Amino acid sequence: MAETVLETAGLTMRFGGVTASDHVDFRLKSRELRCLIGPNGAGKSTFFKCVTGLLTPSEGHVFMRGEEVTGWLPHQIASLGVGIKTQTPNVLDSLSVHENIWLAARRFFDPAEARDRAHAMIERLALGPIARSELGQLAHGERQRVELGIVTVADPWLVLLDEPAAGMSAADVERMTGIIHDLTRSAAVVIVEHDMQFIRSIAETVTVFHQGAVLMEDHVDRVMTDETVRAVYLGKKA
Image: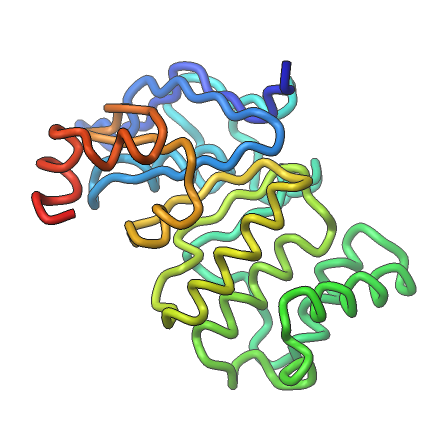
């Protein structure tokens, strides 16, 4: 059986009298790709923040490869070999694309190995023409690709992505789809996303959040045709 690399048990997050994440049990296997969907306020982003260490849950537990990481900070979780991309970019706009990716690799490898990995990642993401450009001067889609390079340059075994396709052009989304499929050869991937076309192009299993809890978890085709999901989340035209 495939190894469970991420698991939550009874994960709950309260903000005053509001329960944003409500006793969520979740399990992800090695090299599995999972998309989390739901409208604003459904609880998926809160769940993501609890898993990545941006929030400490009120109750429940988070395990990565069997080790409890509940309440760990993002950098502590990243040190386990987990790549995290949040909605708030963790980049240095005044440095070049190459420098940003090299610095991310340097956290785990010696300078020569970091250089080799940075070059390989730049080639993999087709960033060569802009490798020496300052990150702050790039278009949004280019920045998203660079951020993905920063997150994955150290070959993480688990990648957590919050809306990686947000604001991208159709061409950029198509390129991102290929990159994410490539990632699943060696890593498990969790994606929080609103773009349903993007989800259709990459997902197999989808977890649907509603009022802080998991409403449904199934193959993307069954989720997309489920009447409750269509009515509550996607709209009748989805």
